[in-house]
Amino acid sequence: MAKELSTKHVLGIKYLNESDINLIFQTAEQFKEVINRPIKKVPSLRDVTVANLFFENSTRTRISFELAEKRLSADTVNFSAASSSVKKGETLLDTVNNILSMKVDMVVMRHPAPGAHHFLAQHIEANIVNAGDGTHEHPTQALLDAFSMREKIGDLRGKNIAIFGDIVHSRVALSNIFCLQKLGANVKVCGPPTLIPQHIEKLGVGVSHNVRDTLEWCDVANVLRIQLERQDIKFIPSLREYSRYYGINKKLLDSLDSEVLVMHPGPINRGVEITSDVADSDQSIILEQVENGVAVRMAVLYLLAAKRK
Amino acid sequence: MMKKGRVILTKERFQLTIDRLCRQLIEQYDDFSDTCLVGIQTGGVSLSERLQQRLSQMLDMPHITSGKLDITFYRDDFRTASKPLSAYPTEMDFLVEDKNVILVDDVLYTGRTVQAALTALNHYGRPRRVDLVSMVDRRFNRELPIQSNYIGLAVDALDKAYVSVEWKEKQGEDKILIFENK
Image 1 (cartoon, rainbow over the protein chains, first blue to last red):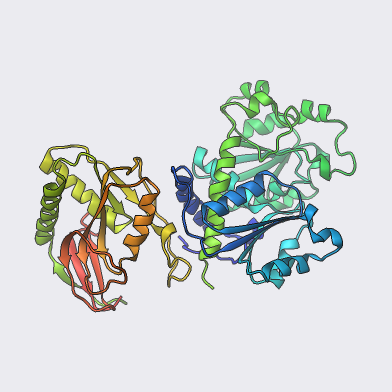
Image 2: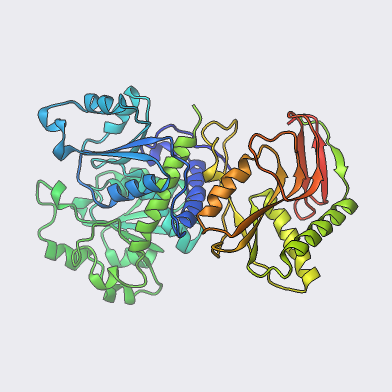
């Protein structure tokens, strides 16, 4: 087993290999113990400064990263596009270079443009962690999803995992597909034809438009949010209709032969893609995902900092 | 390829040394009430488990509080170490608040591991007293003012030498070896 990440940045799951992912999981297990202690802090990154650059809204991911950084004793600076010079017309590279000249070692960034992180990686020295780039990737979410699944059902090799909902607008879906496949799981996506990207089967995933059949097939159901803010045209006739044909409810889950583990990366549209009785049931591990998010992000930051120059 | 090491403590004397350390601890801590053993991952855990086993036999007490502490996240050299460090599990299911803590490590060398362990230990409360037990004390190689209270074997060696404690559970035989080079 590798003791060091193969990359300097975490731009996407696509650029990590299986041993990187397992190293992150192994380290995250130790950090999970740390965040359950009475004093939830270790001094590992006391000499590291991290800039959290959020060019797009976020609650969960930003707080999760910030907590991860604080629990590693890193110094943090926060930036959100709404209150910055970006509004005055500054370019991304200028903004970041200005921040880096204040001696920042690591950048955690969310940006609406797919590939923004790749562009930055070519121009700056600091380690970059992708906290979501447009509809492209959201690697730490995929890592925490897989970590949470592994905790519940063990090794993912040969397991059947289905991703439900708005696949076409979802960076979580793409990162999940890459991550789960690297860990040897079988992946299927399920949703209305308008929300499944064309040619997605070329990635080696199954495609289904039938929620019941897919639930019967899978061990884990990762349900995604309908991203209304990214839909400039109508992809579905109405939320009510979506909920009726593609929503997951308790009655449907109870009628299955085996128990399916239900996940959701949040924020939940209660009553649309998932009903409240499912979201709050014993089958759902939504809040465990959030807890694991901090541990996994601590592991990613720690391992990047530990990577020798 | 590392040269073959020289045995400096055989398995017979190894056992005697463990027994002596246990007796010294009993002399200090009597029945081990309010006292816990904390082994530093990984070598210290092996010694701590062995001490716990032997102490339980000697005192006829099946349960002596003990934990495992990993100090990887507390090291001052994790970004500059010559090889990457991997973390091991920490298992501390008790608080050390107002307890006597017997910190256990296999080799006391520069003292940096112990310094990190003392910081880590603080996160589990404020101990009444902390003692240090080490199987090997390389007393001329210290970089910090840290001393062991209970010593298995004092070894005077050059800085480039390497001392290794082997365990029958792990390597097949209890012994201590010295190698000319790290």
